[in-house]
Image (tube, rainbow, N blue to C red; front, side, top):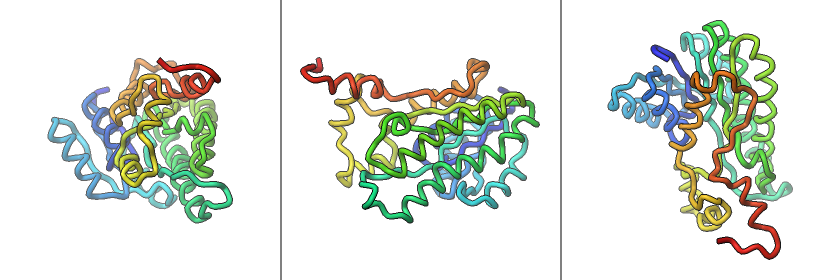
Length: 256
């Protein structure tokens, strides 16, 4: 892992920032890629303050030219973590603004696809490595978010396809399916009354929301040699939500 370069998109905040910090703590040189220069600079500052190595690079994952430009200058990247993404509040299909729908798909799915397409072959040429995409429990169970849920389902499918496509080149491709994670964006939704923390916690067997660091730990594992024969999976890190949400809804069951 010495002198390994890892690139994390969406690393100016939330899961992306926690992942960049975690990989840097493990010894990686981290490229902090994001549209948000101020947030990206803060991520770099935190990494360097802890003795790690990082640099910020501007990246718009929804812009093919932006992705291509960074791929051409980033150097021999060995790990790519696609954290850039947008959340969505509950909406019915007929009520959702189509421009918002298209923007979520442009960032969540197409952005992930463009980055995998650009760096997948380069990681193989550099000697192999790992790609980790960010799916969601909303890609495992349907939520009333008619752009977000399908975009995450598509990422899960893309992950399996790329694992088969890039595996012969020494590139492992996996995804994480986070549960409810207390990121800055999630906190903003809670503060706006768009999320009920008590309901989210009640549906989760471990009784609490995830922190970005919980997701970062799973991403670090999938990038590490400990996961050398793991590819094509979607790993839930959800406090047991996928198990609990149907279990607790069984008629007549009383939760302990």
